[in-house]
View 1 (cartoon, rainbow, N blue to C red):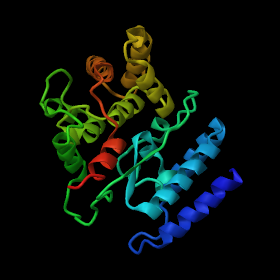
View 2: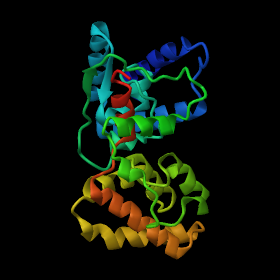
View 3: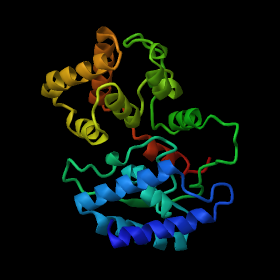
Length: 259
């Protein structure tokens, strides 16, 4: 691992140690950090990451802030104090921020806000549905997107699908949901699923190849062919629609406002 990234990890460890309730990183968090560090080194984006953290350090001197966009998908930036949203908590893969299969450079934008902190003090709250509620209120997603539809098989027929879509009444409203379904049902990697997300809009010629791969993997893992086919069409059409939003960004935006 790059020496500078190791130093960043040491900084994150010190910050974490101040958390009285959870002073140590979990195994999942350590694995996530290592995976992100590997992608950062692979894509040669170490300088950008360090620059983002310097910007956050300067912003912290001026007041409360949050980061916009895909930067909220980075656990490394969260652990270092450069973002306010834990991507593991909201299930946002790092590849939505830095994809090793593309040449896109990561972006980071700071917004100063009245209330950027995530209200974790209420243990009785269903945070996923709370996010949905406020996202609708602030116009991030449309209320119509949450209506029950018979376009696809009932999510409860498959436990994994039910888990991914339960927060939104069985509907895909977040990019994270579409990517997770592509990975777990269709066998795509996070990087491949994100690449599809980036390139699919207005490019339906990708449909046959991706559909074949998706269905083959789904049937092998226990899905009925007809159900898998309907799920693929639903995921594909959701991505094509342009209505999906990045959950990590939505969380940062919603809780970056006065609520």
